[in-house]
Every structure is written in C-alpha cells, then in structure tokens.
Amino acid sequence: MIKFDLDLWFDRGRQEQAIVKLVERVGLTRARGEYLLRLWIYLTVKQQLERDTRLKPPLAKLSLLDAPVSCSQTEAAELFYHDKERGSDRSAGMMLDKLAALRLIRKQFDGNITRIEIIDVPQLRETDPVEVELTITAFEPRCDAIPVANLLAANYNWMNRNTETTPHRITNLLRKWASQYDRGMRVLRRADNFNPVGFYLMYPTVPASDANFFTSPSKSLHLSAIGDVDPFVMAESGDLDCVSNFIRSWAIEREYLNRYRVPFLVDCQKTFITMQQDFPNLCDLYTMIIHPSYEQQASALGFQFMSRDRQLSLHWMYLPLDRFLALDIATCF
Image (tube, rainbow, N blue to C red; front, side):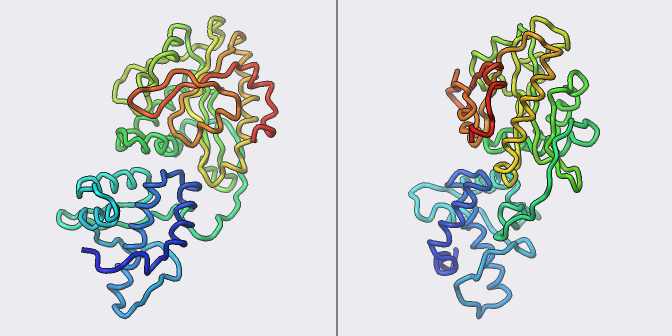
C-alpha cells in the first residue's frame, strides 16, 4: 500500500505543468503522461524516505533516481488507477511495459522484486537542453542503420506492436533498401558526434504495388510486422512506369523538431528533384500516418486523407508531387 499522498509532495499545479511538458515534448498521450508522472513522484519520494525518514513534503524538484526503486504491479495499479473505477494489477503491468517500450523507464526483475528507474532522456530534464548544431547528409548504412532503427521504433512502440524485435528488423530493412536505392534516404545528424536525430525514406514503388495505397493501412505495416513479404516493391532507377512514392519514414526527435522541421522538409523537396532524374514520371506522394504527432504536419503541407484502418489509428494521406515541390515550406508552419 502507498503510505503517503503524492499531492502533498508535488502539488496539482506543478503536476499539471509537468504533464503538459511531457505531452508536448515527449509525445505521450495525456493518460500515459499522468501515469509516468505519478510513478516518477512516487519512486522519488519512496527512495528519499528510505534514506531519511524525517523528510517532509514538498519536493523541491523532480530529479532522476540515483538507483532503481522497487515497485510492484499492485503499487503501480494504486498509483495509476486510484481515482478510477477500473484498473487491475495486470493493466498496471502492461502500462509499465509500454512506458519501458517508449524508453521512458527501465525495469529490472530479479525473480522476486521489480525495480524501476526513470531513464535520463533530455525531454524529462527541467533545464533546457544545450543547443547542438545539426546537419543533413546521406544515409550511411554501415553507421546509421542501428541508431536510425531505434529512432523509428518509437513510432511503433506507442502501438505496443512487437517492440522487442522491431529495431533489429528495421536495421536489416534499411540496409537492404539502401543497397537497392539510397537517394531517397537522408539523415538529420548532430554535427559534434554524427548521431542521427532525424531520418526520412522516400521509397519509389512499382505500379503493381500501388493498389496497396487504397487498402487498409494495417495491411501495409511491414517495418513492425512479422511477415517477410513486403507489400511494396521498390522500383529500379530508370523505371518509366514508376509514378508513386511512399514516404515510408519521416521522423525527428522532438527536442529538435521545431527548429529543424522546415530545413528537413526543404531537403525533401531537393531530394525529390534529384529522384525525378531517375523516375521522370514520378507524380504521386503517399504517406501512412502511424504516430499521431505527424498528422498535423502532413495536413499543413496539404496532404489529403484517404483510407482509414478500422482496427488501428492509422490512415493513408496523399499529395501530388508537383504541389509539394511548389510549396514555400516556411509559410506552412
């Protein structure tokens, strides 16, 4: 049982400010942001009280734990669902797994006790991150495949689909696609250590694959799916029958998104102009909205809704290439 009141240690006003930050900067749903915050407060207070039983509320600030703290599913359920009619220990355990899949917490289980720590991600720090200069360059399969795969996996983890195998699967696919046609693969990377913080993949498709853009989006989830058959076949350079491009990935880490969204999209325009030399009849752009945070961006660029999925929050969007190339990107945001 939880023996102290979280609101005394971190009042409601401060909680609301923290939740807004988590939702906006980390990209969580509000519910998951609340669960993460309650867990963070609880583990912090529990650790500090174990070391000093005379400690009194409130907390001066939320700081990262200096060691994992024990937390059972029962404790987590009381934290998450104390003000709700429904919420079991099993549900709390599944929520902890989702937070771990999003790389916000780390779980350790020794066969008897589960210990949890908050992961040190820049978006959770109370101080503003140090500005780092970024550059946009070509995708390098030998160096970029694994870090880019981990970046992209977060887009699928929010659905909790095959979170353990997705990064390995994406790594192999990225290297395969780069060997076939790499002009449409670009990386936004830090200038100091060359680590990728953004990536996009423009994937030209053969005409036989184009019918998939008009079917249920979940049938075309290949990066996070288990099946080996890719519903989209990449067109070969020089294919005059290729008219469609699948924007298969477009992602920037949230702390860099506002500053580098426009330069990255302008780079997309330049990439398509280059790709038109290889695919002179390219004219249709399709994208699948997987993570909700990118739907607003696509709409701002003029993408139109197409078919939606009945089971998952996925849908296709479409934009003529000529319209995209004519955009003044800076005026869209």
